[in-house]
Length: 238
Figure (cartoon, one colour):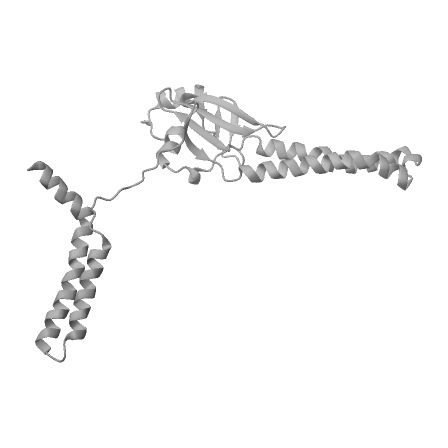
């Protein structure tokens, strides 16, 4: 008896579409063959209408499948944050390094062909100073501004540790591992620093966290707090 029920359920899910099409064609044939009888036309329309709910009922018995996605996981933990400007930061720094290298290569030739190399030392120093500002100062400023920009942030919930990925001066990825207890919020808000991990300033965008609770836990906003003077004194000493 159980096998008969299983075969009926499988047959309901695997009914070919041609069966329904044959029913519709048969109903249409009845409509064409009917000469002018109103009673026959009503029966034909009623048969056609009944074929569509039958198809809907047969399809409703078939189970639907769903595809569920899981968050990326690596050896550092779960990926909870991805910076949207990582590619732009790397491209700007690479362009700055390229122009600085080209300036260093072309500077001796410019000095020789323009005759500045045989003129006064003061003029040479002024020219080299102007070129040096754009050659050396621009890459240094870019690195100081973007060195704390987090391109990826991982969280290990078992140890409650974080791993922040940033770009180094040579455009390689640098890892900063820290515990949640080491996170410190600056007393005065800074433009390029969201929080301090021990002594390293890091920059993240709170709007780019897929789960807001991850940002709240990172910053310690989910911890209970009180307005007692003892707790305030301990936080100031730490």
